Image (tube, rainbow, N blue to C red; front, top):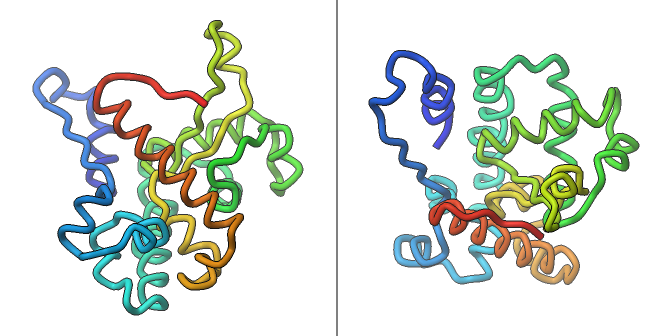
Length: 209
């Protein structure tokens, strides 16, 4: 749910190793959100499944400020930095910005370098995407292939682990997002991808595109 999860993850190799059981609590599913907050499927596609933010969805400006300040900013400026040394914090933010602007899309690291300032090399970008994944913000799906080497070197498909991350950074309000067929289609595809990822993790499986 935030820094506590990351601090636990960081300390697993220390003295408590072997004497813990790890429980991962993902963002809420549509059914959980519907039962607790009465959200419609369209609302869930836009606002996502962070329960603290869902309570504010009637006031979109407040919801967006909460999402950006309390969730996204806290993770990028504190949680990730506690987890690893980030030599280029500005590049990390740009990488996250590229992710939320490209939900459920296939983009090569080489192409990403042309969109990012001071990107350095593809290894740096891949490393920062790895940090975003460990912070439970994004996941880069590998292209399925019978050969593991080909999968590791494949062009990634970016999936945000909650649609609220996309909407809060999009600049579109709920009604405008619903009317934008391309944006809405990406939201649907991203939500399905994120849910399949959670289910695969729950059952000890892997997911590819």
